[in-house]
Length: 282
Length: 257
Image 1 (spheres, each protein chain N blue to C red):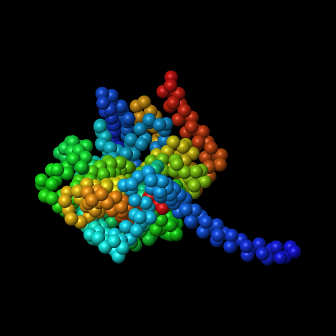
Image 2: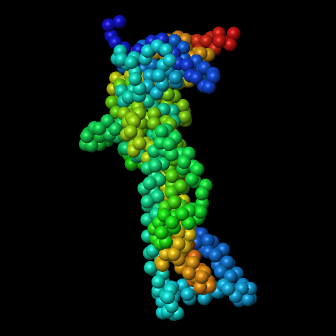
């Protein structure tokens, strides 16, 4: 008996621990799905109960989504056009975002480090900052015309400030000790810019990039209200004009997923670049 | 005085201005250090010992007097005077290797030479296994070894140490003290070491400089004649400790009176 128990105990242990490991991995995923599934259920029941005529049920939206993506169900103007709209929006989002990053990061480094540049630009930029991106819409339509350029500009504007402000913050908060260490090791003046300031500010710069990219997806709908033929914002606006709520919801879902995936990509890059920082692991 | 001292501090004073207030951190300090000497600065907080060290490092300019190295005024921080900070001051985004190579690389040394220097010092401090680790993965003792190595790898003639072992536990501190002495004896470095521990000062130094606060100044100097390696539990060591302790306390008593 005793021997049998000894024999079975180690055999049982690994299977249980494997099961536990699986549960440990799936646990958080399952938990994160609870609220969305409950909301879906609530939505479904509310539509079933006839609380609204204007909103389609989740199943109907899912069906439209399939049609929107691959077509073959309704065959209307929007069938199988998802990739076109997604590509149009993504190119504007990433284009505007990258341009904002290319301008805002160097500018933030300069403002944070050089007093003259700060005095020259900071008051002006602070004054422009409270103006919401949406308020720029009419002006940008005049400046850039009806079309993709205007959307591009608004995305740029939306992503610009979070990147700029976080870069400045990062530069200003470099530990003074590191400048002392660098200078006594023979790294002085402008050389400190690349060897101390930039790497030390990198965590803040990444925070800015994350926020900026998030805002870029946020602004794209507004940007694409300006009469562009393609783009997820345009789909949502068209859906609204045509009273096709399912189209609006499909556009919302695609933007949500695209924004989420973009953010994960930035987080992945961030984790790679900031392996040295214990605060940025995982 | 045929021999030129490596460090010559002449009537050095430092006054900070904070708004309307003027704070005299250091008054009329005089000190000469010969090449290869191990000098400890000791005293209560506010005695100006860190200020004096930072003036020698070139981080601060004296308000009065002259700070000279090899008879030339110290103009600013430079690789010939390496500083070891209590909080390490390592670059968190660089590995152990890269931290040690930072100085030689900044000074434009060829790549192969930098790599060779780095390997030598990584081995010297016994961190071969951690050579590619980042500072946050190291213990305090390891970090301080890296901080010392990066200064030595950069050909520092004078090593300035500002309570370098103050944040370490007692066992690690003792081990690093031994390692530092061994390095010092092997390389002929000049060390200026700030501490507030009498025992640490007597264990390490050729000469102990006692400083006192209000305003910060040098009160007395004591040559430690104990043969090395020193035994902290020996009666001779204790006698020196008692003597120096009495000196420190009498300075404080005089000030309090």
